Image 1 (spheres, each protein chain N blue to C red):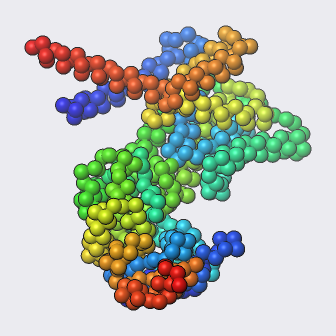
Image 2: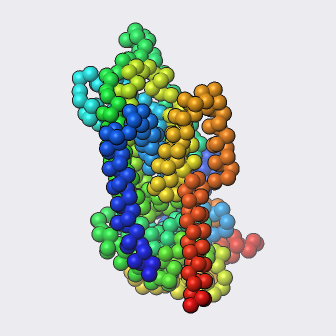
Length: 239
Length: 323
């Protein structure tokens, strides 16, 4: 079943087309990858989904409901959470408060402070940061800051999680740990849609992959199909 | 050991605050009659500074609209003061300022950084010029007389307003609303994507802070007897609270308060003692404060507290070595 579908999604910045007439589907329970060379429009597509930008024209539906034009906090409360390419944490606030904010504000129903605290603690356990609860989030390593973002996103109880280059800037050990984390997120029942440049990671964890180039979708399929697609190889390696 | 220290610190702090409030409350009964007048000015600046910090501190949005909300309060008192009791028109003055802030905030809080600062300052000028135009061309007279209240009445009104404001600030800081406000200052985009209705949080806080500015304006109007748009919408009122907040330091709740106390006291004394040199001394103090105390008085106090702690620790370690 489709949890997320986009039809004719387009975004211009001035006269420049960033995302051009892209149709896409994300299936519930899967890990879908989004790849493409720099400037292909991947992050723009994420911004269109999460409500930071509005497609014009085009429509995006989440669980059959149209979400185009909604404010980011509304989309978040409906069940779409995200992380950012350049980490956007609340650096001067303790790690636990970063996650707590997600629990307190990320769902349409209210939650007691005690429950929110408990939930935030559990999520920090889940991403492996329970030892760093009270440290200001800005003091963590990049890999751990990305985990804070993931925990914060998960605290909003999403059904769909958008991960924007979670492995960029991580060393090989951290990368394989991050891959494990992505898998365990899926095992919690959260659908994952991820942008990634690290090919090993994307081929390893994704069920399906979509390729963007100059804002257009040029391929869509299983990792194997993508790896052997002539068009994709041309884009990445030249002719 | 640390836990007992924290636990024993709280009643002490509450007691101290209670004591200060009581001393202030009975001030007019024992102090010379000038003291409540001086304290009224100080309390007014505390209220303006703390309510400015309430919004601009955590969010990082530099608002220069203080004079606008203050002036709206002044004019409310001038218009309603003759027909209503003091608490009612103070409240209405605050309320009208809050409504103006809510509307203006809803329109402009998408502006960031310097654009927001310029717009809010423009608001002061806009309201002033509109009023001037209205008074000159429609009413035919410039300015208005305001009902006059006793010095002690004004003093008590400010004291109550101050206590209410401190409670409001304290509870906002402690609440999840305050947490959301802080997260907006840290990273607004991330806050929005974490499910926080950033526009609403900002606009509501802006309105609450404007309420206190307007209420302060409505109260002090009764001491000024006459106001016109130039007096009511004096641009200085937008800048002085910011200077006081920087001077005191915004990291802690008490920072803006002591900043305002010292600054307002200096201002009153300098104006009476050295009317010609007042602005000059003021400027020198300010430059020195910014150069040598980047975190304000709070930073200095925290540093001293750290030194005392270290010294005491060192002392007890020595004692242990002796025994």
